Length: 214
Image (cartoon, rainbow, N blue to C red; front, side):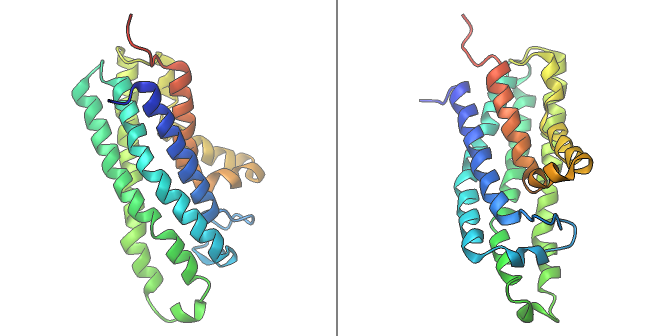
């Protein structure tokens, strides 16, 4: 039996919560040293890195179901463009999954600075994995553009005002909160994408029409 719109939205929300929880354990720094490389990860215990790794790994596949929810909510306006958004975003999340799977390892390396001193291991990590992070950012931007276009054009299951609640704008909101109120924003910055999609799925389920037409 196919998942209906409500079920796929709920599963996507579960994915955002699980991955967000895992990424928070992997990336949160009370001193907010997010722009200073990976050194802050030396303060995160191996047990916490491992738990964060597995929470994120369990949650990531659920995101693809959530992306299918977005497709189902948009397809009545333009099925081909809605599916293109799903496919492009799914590709980005595959790249994001590879990146996420590397985080516990780079964190563990920070516990042994003597092993990486004088090597190019960190530079190679940045080339091989941080590059992939840019892919999910670009594909999320593309998905958001398709979403905004279809919602504003009409015919989707969303009211037009929900065009403003697209993933990219919600990510930007997390960054703005960090800049304006860093004491709160530092809790959001490490998981900004997951917060964005989590809020989106909640709003989609709350304000979108998930029921079948009468």
